[in-house]
Each structure stands twice: as structure tokens, then as C-alpha cells.
Image (cartoon, rainbow, N blue to C red; front, side, top):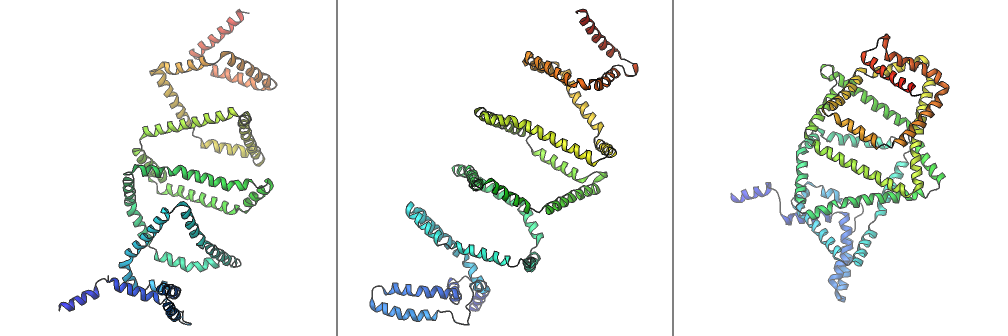
Length: 489
């Protein structure tokens, strides 16, 4: 009874018999054509080692080797079991799964020992063997495979949908087997696991600060590698003649599909329009849902933001920007030619801005009639909310009023320091020639400009002929000033 129970347990339980696995492994792979080729190549070497220098053993080894080699020749018409079929055999998988950790560990240990010995070699010897490994690795075969695949695709130019239709059942099969709900649940479940894993790794890494510092020190090296790689890439381009380089760039620009770009813009614009419309439809009390969601997100984010730290970081960024400007100025001081070009760049930017607005005005004048201009201007002005603008200006003025009331000397001291720091002779000279130039330039049109300006000032001083006491007092002071000026003449 016990014997029977033991047999049943052995039949139903997982098999971990190493001998059975090794035997199955050897039996399975011995039937493959790949293993036959390996054995055929190994037999002479094994027998050669066995024979050594003995003539008799060498003769026996030759006879036995030829006989064994014939037995491992792939048989015509009888295909050996492919390795992939052997690995996919259910019984082999069951037996191999129990041994797979040991196999993987053996491979890792072997690679570790191999790389350890490589690293322990003298530099010259290490370079030699690494070079031999690289030289003997058939990357050219990989290139040939890529080329052949590309050639096969090129031969289907007359059938542009061939690859697409050939891949369709594969894609359909892939999508039918993928449970995106499970993927979403896995991603949601990892929302806590992945950050915790990252935290654990960082905690363990910081147990070795020197290693962490070495890891962080890789960042400048990576930046240097990227920059130098870009330099190596751009350098040969700059060696091209200007006409050839321009022709290449223009050909690339011509190959860009402008219609597709326009279609993309239309699709994105339509998405934005639908989001705006849908936001209004699903919003509460006639409001938009998207601004409410963004506002909620911003409020939740700001609750966690250290505002003081954020402001300090912004201050540091401003300091870095100022230091960068100082560095640029120092470079300009050392090279007058660059300084002159930098000086002119401001005028070129202004000229470009003026030309852009000139083109806009010319375009509007050509495509719009007077009625169209009036209508479009009215529509544009209707987009501006004068009440909001007035409220904003009133709020700003109220802030200044509060500052003036609670701290009267703040703004006054600032203005006093500002004007006292000005060179009155320099500023006065600028004001004199600037006003004179403006007056001389405006003289031809003064008769058209000044009457409405003066009339407007008079209307503002006494609207509808009514003048307030404060305005009357101000006009009296102005009149007394003119009277004193006449008295001094």
C-alpha cells in the first residue's frame, strides 16, 4: 500500500529528477541537425585528445571517428527535430523549468568568470582578445539581413499594401490576445509599487555615497559625449560647399509633405474645438468642465508646493541668467566686431518687427474694404472687456494708494533717488534736442494736429463750460506762472 502510494505521488508530483532531465535534454538535442553538426565536429577533437601520441590509438581513433561521424551525418529526406520544437515540447518544458534557474545561474557564472578573466588580463592582451571577439562577431551578417529585408520591401513598390495586408492578421491576432484591461490594472497596481521600488533602490544606493557620487558624475560625461557626437555629426556637413549644402537642405524641405502637416493641424484644431464644446456640454451650471478640472489640479498641486522654496529657486535662476549676461558682455568687450554685430542685432530685430506689421497692414488693406475693416475692428474690440480692464487698472491704482497712505516715503524716496542719480546736464541736453527735433519734424503737420489737441485740452479743462474748484485753482496757478514769466521780460 505504501509502495503504491509512493508511486502515485511520484507520478502526480512535479518531477525534479536531474538525471531524467539531463537524459531527456541529451536525447532531445541529439536528434537535432544542429547537434549532429556539433558532434561531427567534436568527435575528431575528442578522439585526438584520447589518442595522444600513441600510433595505435591514433589508428583506432581514425577508424572509430570516421564510423561515428557517418552516424551523425544528417539523413537525406529525414529532417531532424528543430531546436525550437524540442524546446517547445511540453515534457521538456516541465523538466527544464525546474532546472532553468540552475542553467541561468551557470550561464551568468560563466559569463562572470569570463569577463573577470578578461578584465584581469594585461592591457595589451585584453585588447587583443577583445579585438578578436569583435572581429569574429559576424555583424556583417546582420547588415546583410537588413539589406535583404529592405530589398524585399523595395521589390513590392508596385504593391504598397502588401506588407500592411500581410501584417494585418498578425496584428489582429496580437490585439485579440492582449487584454488591455489587465494591462491597465497592472499599471494601476504598479502606481504604488514602482515608486516604492525606486525609493528602495535609492535608499540602498545611498548606503554607498561614493558609488552614488560616481553615478551622478556620469551626467557631465554623458553630456560631453552627446555634444561631441553632435560636433562629429555636424562637422562633415560644414565641409560641404555652400551651394551643395543649400541644395540638400532644400531637397529635404521639398520632400516634406505640406498637405499632411496641414491635415494634422486641422485634426488637432478639431480636437481642441470638440474638447471646448464638450467641456461646455458636461460642465455644471453652464460652465466649462476643463477649466474647473485644471483649477482643481492647480489647487491640489499648489497645496504641496513650497512657495518660499519656489521663489528662492526662481531668484537663483535669475541670478544665473544675470551671470550669463555678464559673461556675454565680457565676451563682447573682448571683441569689438562681435559687439558691433550684437549692437546692430537690436536694430535688425526692430526693423523686422516693423516690416512684419507693415506687411500685415498692407495685406489687410488689400483684402478688406473699408466696411470690412470697420466690421473686423468692431469684432476685435468686442473681444476686449472694458470693465475687466478698468477694474484691473483701478486695482493697481488702489495698491499704489495704499502704499502711499501707509508708507508715504517709499515711492517718493525711490523717485528721489532715481532722479538724483540722473545727470541733469546729460538728460537736459537730450530733452532739448529731442523736443526740438520733434517740433521741427512736426511743423509741416502742426496746423492739422495742434488745433484738435488744444481744443481737446480745453474741453477737458472745462467740460460743457463747467470748471471744478480744483481745476480752477490749477488754471490759476498756470496763469500766474505765465504772468510771472511776462513780468520778468
